[in-house]
Length: 318
Image (cartoon, rainbow, N blue to C red; front, side, top):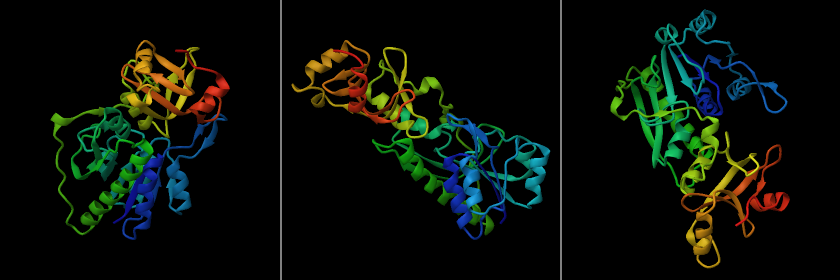
């Protein structure tokens, strides 16, 4: 069964690799987004899927708009029965939606976390599980019927990186199961989503990246983990600059000070924001404190919190 693959981000790369390695479902064509300026030098760079497709020897095109007639004719010329979509990053519209069966690999247990950032939002919300859904792409936002779904636990120390890696493997397995069943004429019937369980995973914006001293240490820790390593959380310093936060950990009461933490907890309760305490870099929160273990000053390199304090002086004084 001929497959055309639409994907862009790093998450889609594993799905593409598993399809390419399968004898029956190797894509005859890969479509991804055009090269864009990236990094400080703003040099043109290819999306991760484009780089991997070239390495795998797959036919590759990067249309400006996949909904244009020329792109649709390109897909039709392959004779592909199915178009697989994973983290493509652009809206797919009619008539392309009706011209082919489009299977979407979505990393959540739909209808929970429809939208652009389902992995990040699941971690930030403190969900204890998420998963992958293989769904038929329709005009609604991730609202199409689901062919297969499977759950994956979210561990207390999971970051985006660790959780996404497991969801990539799970998604590839589910997708290949669905494609193989369809090729054998025994494909599962898709099940409509229950609209009562819908939540939306909005795209991560600048405000989502900023750690909030009025939230608890546990909540801020989830934000750090949800945005690492691909986006990154930030903490506001007293001078208004933003400190990148790559790794952090909530401090228990016993870890807050030499005398059981009571003195420090009382002190931090009257403070807010990034502070220094006995060689540690902390974010004073509404409940507890978050130790900033690995940070990155503006224009600088990543370093541990103690090294930052040695080079920049105390971020605040108790």
